Image (tube, rainbow, N blue to C red; front, side, top):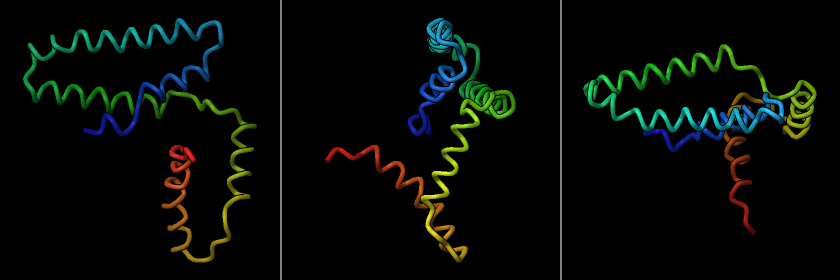
Length: 122
């Protein structure tokens, strides 16, 4: 149901392009996309041998396992210098807030404001 909310392929491909040297990017992209396509090709076989509940439990366990693997083993792809520049820029643009309600409002509105730049076609 939430598969359209986040494009995991785009996230993985961007992280892959950050950590792979340029001469290995094309083969790495090919391996990832081949594995993804093989999953689509072989998934009907799982439907034959597993029930609907079994397929759902298997998919959920793979999803949770991949999330834990990503949190534990994947390195940060942003360099330390770029991270510090982004942090200092974000802190410089942050308005002065005195109450917890202002901080909460800012933290809830900031992602929406940042996503609004995607729809600017004026």
